[in-house]
Image 1 (cartoon, rainbow, N blue to C red):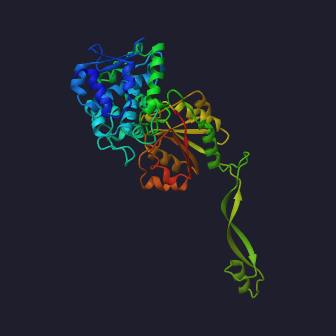
Image 2: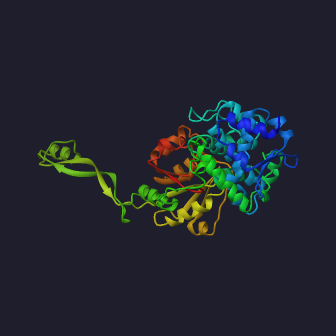
Length: 447
């Protein structure tokens, strides 16, 4: 059977209304591309390598996923998004498309193309495929073997978001790759990507015409349900965006620090109660040294001294201690957090505490010059030791949440502190500090 006929058959097997698509493109069997590609010339071509199909996409379901993968690069504008796409950019594009298609067609017969072509025990290759035992919306996203190392916890966070309802953006993937893959482009040379990612195939008027035509055809395709709504082929012709008027990272952090500092709206410092021992006199008898002496001299006292503990309002004077996570997983968001802290200088202690595996203090002036010291790792114990040593009562931590599990000594310190936590970006690691935080915010940093 000719390859074009096989593609037509696999499309019908997938219940996609793509007969019109096949009339728009000319299917060409060629070894000029490693797997498949869409060439947007005057007459659009779908280039398919027959040897690749026989080896890796022999079933109708796998062949359908291969065709849809290549079409989506054009439909989502990947060929025109960047002037020159690096190998890392193409890796990120593939990871997002594979996750979209896996959510649209989660049956094992369809996702087998990605699961068989990519290994789940190799990082970063495992990001290009769904995990074994995964089904959208049912339970937690399983952990692939390559991401079971605790040091890769931020990568796992992004990967699980990618295959959950939460979703992950191109920026999320780029950021985590840059933080955990040294010499990124060369490290990805060993990962074979589907298609040839030649930018010249997607430019020009034909690409626009092809995109619009397929968008019309795609109205009959089943919708993609999940966090990518608005990025699917059915919505490319007409895209409506819901305007989000959420406060930015700096405004949210300013509000959190002010809350921990006890500052009322308008900038006045709210008093906080302090236990104070008062001495009063009362006719009620009490054990009073002066009364005992008076009775010994034969004099009956009229008043007795009493001590009373009262809560008295004392103006807030202590500025908030800021602990800023500068570990390796925070690469790419530190600059924004520095700016956010400097915006709150009126409420912040003159020295900001940068922490990774140890605490390093910097002044606000040094922060303005961008000074940063980090050991790369992360350990909550250095923070709690610093809090205990300096008797910190009010503190705000800026972190992605991956600080490790506090032990019993850490917990005692954290429970004594009026603690606020600002999480940088999306994270699922709120369980480490969540039980001890009096207030938390999710800062939209890097989104």
